[in-house]
Length: 197
Figure (cartoon, helix red, strand yellow):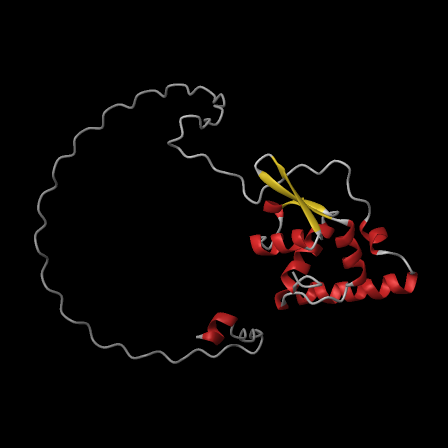
């Protein structure tokens, strides 16, 4: 590994520091790539221990020291807003003379409980899958039976009516003009959907 972490590795360090210096790998976003994790371990910026079936990543003293002196380190371009905030934090820490550790706080003694990205959903085929508890539903009282409806008798066939003669053409009525006493409402401006059409 080079002397300082790459932008992606620096982002991983900032993700860990944002969680107090330690977190399960599966809870970090963006996803941790093995090559980045191994490079940070080799550079002694983080340590890794197994916790159950997960990996717990923890920032070492060297990682804390690097972060305190490199708040202006390059991050991936998609994280420009984080880089801007880190610049503002660096200016504030320099003006007050406080170290980064004072801002972030101490590393928790006991790691916080793990929260997974998305809970696993059990398959319906899984025999161990638990069914949701049944709730007691109010008993329905039987409704009285309806009397059978009488059968309808077919109606007699209709006979064709004599053809009507066409009526004389109607003359169109003149258009009504609004009375001056009624106020006309202005036309509504076209909406966004109408403008796109």
